[in-house]
Image 1 (cartoon, rainbow, N blue to C red):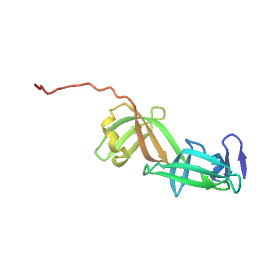
Image 2: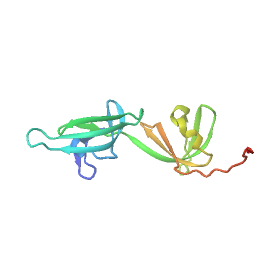
Image 3: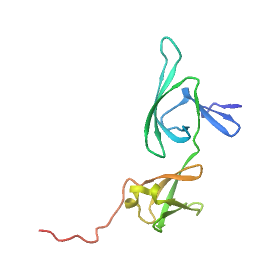
Length: 156
């Protein structure tokens, strides 16, 4: 077992964990076998009794917000989450295809994951694709999109 001072996690073979006193906003962990984002954490040290951490977690697959209290001795596994900036290529109705402009690797994303974002994706635009265990779980399109008005129906 080795302790890494920089990232505040313990490395036990293949499994890396965060101790509850190192839970910070923005860190991604595995909770109930699902990747979660720590949205907020509050360390509480009562005058009497054991200290604990109050945490708000957002499940990355279902977007559900959970409030949970952890003892100071608890720990959770670090989620294997990677975010890539990819360019949108095309879709075939079921899958949407993206390319990494640095490595030229192609990635296909199911339409269920694209969801409501499909109306904001234009060919050759970049977006952020989030992978968990090398599987796409969400996409984030650009905040701003340049569109051209082609036709406007005449009104009174």
